[in-house]
Length: 57
Image 1 (spheres, rainbow, N blue to C red):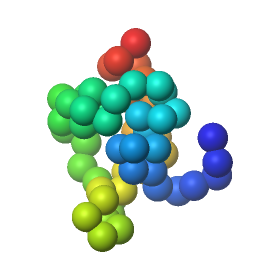
Image 2 (spheres, helix red, strand yellow):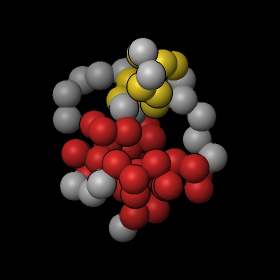
Image 3 (cartoon, helix red, strand yellow):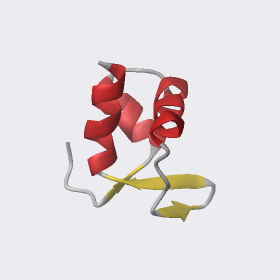
Image 4 (tube, rainbow, N blue to C red):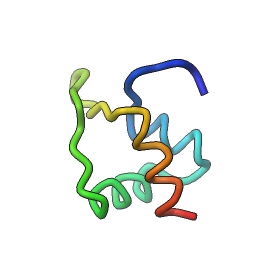
């Protein structure tokens, strides 16, 4: 994965290999709040990737 400080739902989904919807549901279940926004896209800390991976595994 590239060295970014934030990721979007789409980036997380692509990295894990699942749909955006599954990632959004996992983020909601984990009650993770975005760290920022770029336009309409919510930005999450890169650590969210590991947490979502564990939930969807």
